[in-house]
Every structure is written in C-alpha cells, then in structure tokens.
Length: 353
Image (tube, rainbow, N blue to C red):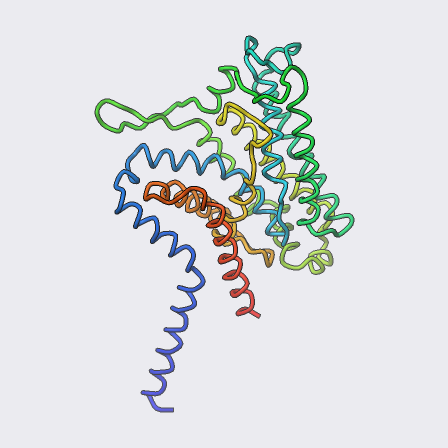
C-alpha cells in the first residue's frame, strides 16, 4: 500500500471519528448553540440575577434527576417520581404550617420541628421507592409498568390527603417561617450593582451536598459498583455474588429518598401546595439524565452528566421564553429531546455491538 493511500485511509478514519463524536454529542451541541443564541439575543440572560435564577431552578430539579438516574442505570425508569414529590411536598407543608394559619390542616399537632419533617418525608419517599423496587425485583416486572401503577396510586392518595383535616381540598399554604427560611432563606447574596444584591437560596447548597453524596455512593461504595454491574449484565452480576433483589430495592429506595427531599424543598418553594405539585417532574428528570449520558441500555452513567443534563435543560427552558417561545410548547420540546437523546444512546450501543 502506497504512502498516499495510507494517508488517505488515515484521514478518512479521523474524519469518521470526528463525525461520530459530533453525532454522539449532537444534542448537547444543539442545546449549547440555542443557549448562545439566547444569550446574544437577550443579554439579560447572562445577568447575575438570571444566572442565580437558573442555578436555583437547577437545584430544585436536581434531586429528582439524581434519584431517577440510578433507576435508568438498571435499564429501568420511574414514572412515579413526580407524584412522590407531590405527596411528600403536601405532607411536609401540612405538618409545617404556621400555628395561626387560616386553613391549618392539622391544628391539633401544632408545627413540627423541621428536622423531624425532613426525616419523615425522606423516609416516606424511600418507602415508596422500596415498594417499586420490590415489585421489580421480586416479580421481574418492568419498572415502567410498576411505577406507572404507583403513580396512579399516589395521585389518588394525594387527592384524598388534601381533603383531610381542615383543608377540604384547598391549597396547603400559610407555612411557618422556620420552614420557609430553612429552604428559601439565604446565607449568601451576590451583588448586582446599584447597591442591590440577589440572594442564593439555601436549597442550592442542599442540592450541592446531595450531589456530593450521590457521587460518593455511585463511585466509592460497594452498593454503587453492584448497581452498575447489575445494570450492565444482571446474570453476570448474580454469578459474581451481587444480591440482585437487595440491590434493586435499594436503588429504588434511594431514588425515593431523593424525591422525598425534593418534595420537602418544593413544599416551601411553591408555598401553596395542591394535588398537582410535582406534576410531570419525572419528564424533566428523565430528559436530563439521557442528555447527560445515563444510558437506558444499562450500566452507564455519571453524576456529573446528570448535573450537566439538568443545567442544560433548565437553561433552555429559562431562556426560550425570553426570545418569545410559547411556553405551551415545552412538553413537545421535552418529548423531542427524550426521543433524540434515546436514539443517539441506542446508536452508540449498536455501534459498540
């Protein structure tokens, strides 16, 4: 083979590699280009207040994506995530209403301590997740079916819950200052000029701590290694000594705990909670995970990818209304993102095969 032929062949291979890299990351590139276009069209998009708003929204949605990411690593999903956020938000809000709230749901118990309510709703979320994991692990049901059923059960339970006590179906509001300050208060503000400052809400720091915790669990624990092994090849993991049942239940329970904390934050962030709180949050979480490279093929995913996915998704949906995009189109856009990301993910899998 001549030197010229070898050079042409090498050049062709290099171009193919570049093409593969561009195609595999096409969604990220498109989203970044959209973000750049928004920033150029509307410079206010890059203002300190806008950036803090973006970070705050990312922090609010991040725990749900961190939880659902583990379910996707197991080649599953969790359609009950949004309703779990909703029921834990309503429970937290109802237990942390101010004593003198006009529509106090449970007047007989006063206002519980914030740490007690955190433990309660995180435990409730973990219990719901473990319920999902049990049906998946014990009866080998597909997570889509199990969590769809749980979603419907939770929604019914939530509709009944908001009718209880003195609430009579109205929005749960009138929250105690201890609750709202714990979630929406601020220990750090960013100056924006003119003597004004924009506070960074406390739940941003909680999201950072949860991200560090999940990174440690995924990367530094035996449980994390077992999770990835199970997602990559269940039979091989079983032969290697992985307790498939326990690992599956724990992955879903951990996801549920994350939804529970997200619900606790959402209860104060929304401040007026109804049966629709948390509606479709699982769509954002699933989209963020697939954008960030968590593969439905199983056994593939990184925490930093989940964070990047949530950030990019929020960036798009905070920015698009600024350039006149009808907000009613957001669900169609999310659907398109999920389809495109999953198609790219499957392409990578088929190329490897």
